[in-house]
Amino acid sequence: MFAATTSTLAWIPTSRQTARRSPSSTCTVKALARAEIMGSRVHRQGALCYIGAMPVEKGETKTRRGSTQTKRTTEMCSILACYDPDGALTDGREELMRSLSARMRTRGPDGSGYYGNERFGLAHERLAIMDPEGGKQPIVYEAEKYSVCANGEIYNFRALQKKYGLTAAQTGSDSEVLLQLYRHMGVDFVKDLNGIFGFVCVGDDGKNMMAARDHCGIKPLYMGTGVGGAVWFASELKAIHDQCTSIEEFPAGHYWTPETGFVKYYAPEWDSDDFVGTDDTSNVRAALTQAVRDQMMSDVPIGLLLSGGLDSAVIASIIKPMLEETNQEFITFTIGQEGSPDVMAARVMAEDLGTTHHEYLFTSEEACAVIPDVIYHLETYEPELIRSAIPNYFLARLAAQHVKVVLTGEGSDELFAGYLYFRDAPDGAAIHKELRRIFHHLHNVNCQRADRMTMAHGLEARVPFLDPSVINAVMRVDPELKRIDGEEKPEKHALRALFEGEIPAPVLWRTKAMQCEGVGLNWVETLQQFCEAQVSDADFAAAAEKYKINPPQSKEE
View 1: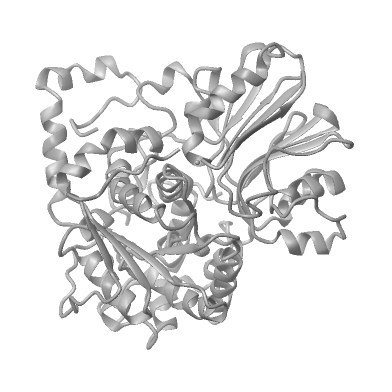
View 2 (view 1 turned 45 degrees about the vertical axis):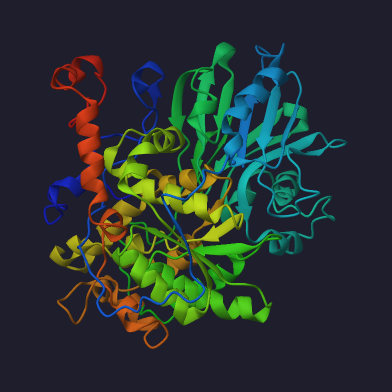
């Protein structure tokens, strides 16, 4: 991985150069202080933008406003695993693990399960998307003593079953292929996976075990050590924080076994100091279209989070003909305040595409009211990440009333140099190195926000831009083609040009807006005033003494 230095980052605004946090470091439970693993302060600024001459007619748009919205009682897909070779937690393990797993039930409201013996335990809360009736977890091959517990989706599971001539699956669940491949070829199979995942596989009745996380941390996974040397794995920190003496974030693109420790399996050619991209963008659209098709895999209806920005509009234009092929309804969702740029732009796209469009118009007071819930699910105290997650919380709540799976436009900015500060990059090499740096922060920023806010409502978010094939295609593009150069070449002009004539021009060429600004102009100010009123001057003055690890720098924090 590229290690940024002060000199190489001289053109980047100071607030973007380094995170005050160290999100991937190992820390004791006591040192986690007020929160656990936190998101880093990276690349969340943009330009305030207004949409002019936008039609107000909404057609099939269905609007809910803050004053009439009823809160949905939610219950998420999560995994919990305990590797305990010495049997220190044998007595009462199932009861303990079921209770710990229940802390993550919002991730999997469709059922829970447990399997284990004196050496290990697997627990699961399930959101049923593939094979809702037959894909319950943990999936167990009782005769062979193999089992798996997985969170996420394996998009190429059928191709892998065919490639390796695997025996007939016992379920229709995509997760079963993990069990099949682990038996067939050991840990090396993880390199072949295309998906979003955090999983634990057990072999030989607990004598062998492996855990793995997807290539860029789209799905969460944490790891800790507890009583008697037992090793714990969980989708969220809240499940294991009181069982471990130390906890760390499981690194993206790695697998783990008791014998090897962490092993990096995702090491693309472009992630090197010596790599020089020379491709044009001719391969990008095909890769993105295939990624969207792969991620449309589901046995339940799928929707799209339509932000009103370029990235979700691109995904929308790709999805439409696919849904028409199968005569499926095109369902879209938008969040914002009345008259906000995002809402207006999303209405244009929804009308152009003829979608069944749902939007929720939240109030500033509502934004303040949900702060405790957002922090609970997000598991961070980073104010900018919390602030940006609040609209996502409302958006996920809205979408979860209609679908179980949504596609989003997350990840495009980290591939196409979509942030406005890239206009100060001195050359293409600097652009590529900065893209590598912010790509490796995705697991703590965009991915963490997208996963936690959707799964807080039993909703799964999929991210076609972060498909490995798309990442590879875009990162191999000559970085000079990503350079911002005045009005003729705004940010992400290389992506925009691929969809010229297909996306309405006011949306296609809309300047990037920071999410907090795009959804409304006044709510952040109200939120900051609210936070200011909650903390006295005396309490803030004493904060550094009370919170010795990463003391707050503002009353909002």
